[in-house]
Image (cartoon, rainbow, N blue to C red; front, side, top):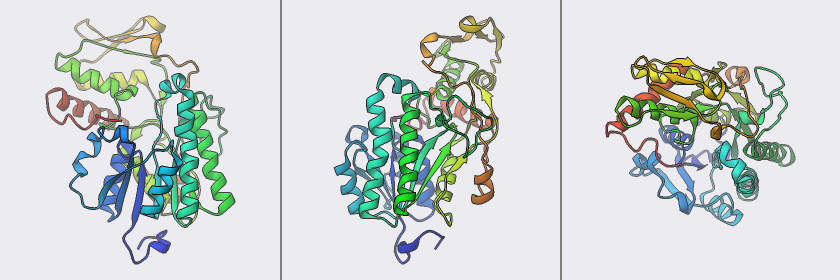
Length: 357
């Protein structure tokens, strides 16, 4: 047995993952199954049809979907009391920053209070369990220092980030108040071929693939100067698992330590399909043009945030030193991986990998 199994010694390790139908949930489920866990994935009734990312796990006898909702404490209590997980990974959320400005109340209810409801279910029914909360680099928002560490002050700049801040402090409070093994993973942007199409990285990789196959002419984006610390989701779920293997609960930044702009992501994506870009104009008039003179990238103010987060860059030294974690996939490899997967989809193969939410 690995450290942290506690009362689980002598029986199969059981984990509960909320948000299992999403990008991170699917990669985490795969990792835990490979480690010998019985995995229960929580899914809302409305998302039970959006299971494309986990359909390949349907025949796995140690993987089960259970119905529940982060907006409904009763359903969470029922699931936790029945499953009795030793590890709980709360990845479920309304996770689109732009959408959070349109639906701030729902975002706060699911992303913020949903974490509290799950913590309370854990406290009541499995107080010896280990709890992981998916926090976000969006907490830093209007950053006061770079790179950002576990001690950098938060300044959230969206309803999504505000809700994540509530969940972060709720997790910290349950750790300090009840002695629960509850941790926050402050994950910087992490992508993959399974990323939702609403996110800018997947929007770019999909557009590049469709341009390459003649299905699309160009893509419209928001702030090309926005800089993010982008890593591979498959690497980042390993950090989540390692946090719950630690001797003591703590909060960790998970990041690559590299910052790249949206423009750079476009450069690599279109170069991958043999259509390198050159940039012309400035501001909302800026365009990315390929060697044939065709405009492939435009700026559309519709995609600007009401309050922009200009730059995020993480320092994952603590995760490296205490957890033995480090990223394996480079930024360049990540972009190529995503474009290649979208090329497969555009050509009619591997279409399920990025569907669902």
